Image 1 (tube, rainbow over the protein chains, first blue to last red):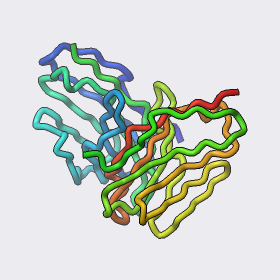
Image 2 (cartoon, rainbow over the protein chains, first blue to last red; image 1 turned 135 degrees about the vertical axis):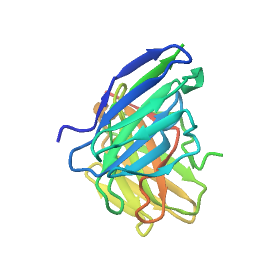
Image 3 (cartoon, one colour; image 1 turned 90 degrees about the horizontal axis):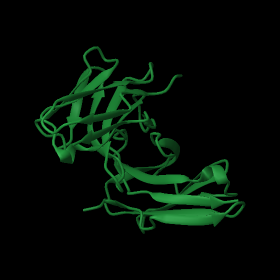
Image 4 (cartoon, helix red, strand yellow; image 1 turned 180 degrees about the horizontal axis):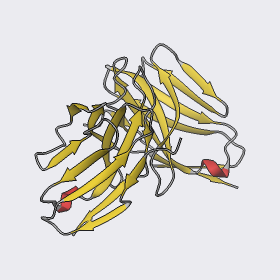
Length: 114
Length: 114
């Protein structure tokens, strides 16, 4: 069990640029989640996948955000035309399917939009 | 509208004493509750959980208590150790099997002094 891996750990970009983050879940986990955490707040749910199907998206996920999990393994989160308000820690988590299986989080990607 | 509230931003205790972290929620649909611990530059780590059909769950030094009528839960750590120093997040989810969509509190920074 190598844990949930996220890449990159840090990303600094200029406003208006596109960025893409990658998440590799724990291998036997079929559920994958994206959360966002801003300073002084707890993580906020963005979206989740069961295998390759994206089953729910938060209204926090504007049209500029898109997440994919094409083969039911790794996932990408893309933000287009970044804004300063997108600066946050983006956390990926995975879990087994089943009632109340705890989420295992990665160490996150910290995005800074200048 | 914060549905999960951790009203104490910080807590300081002496090594060996009990740490009590509190959490209140407002959404009556929540029926599964979790505590996560977070060290700087790492993602949240699952600590302990409790279902609404229970009022107590214990795992080693960690015990979570749930008072449904008061919509209140607490995490007890005894004895506290310096390595327990971290931010603790309370989280809740609605409905059995809906653990993907956790609502987190803002966290409480616990400092355990040697």
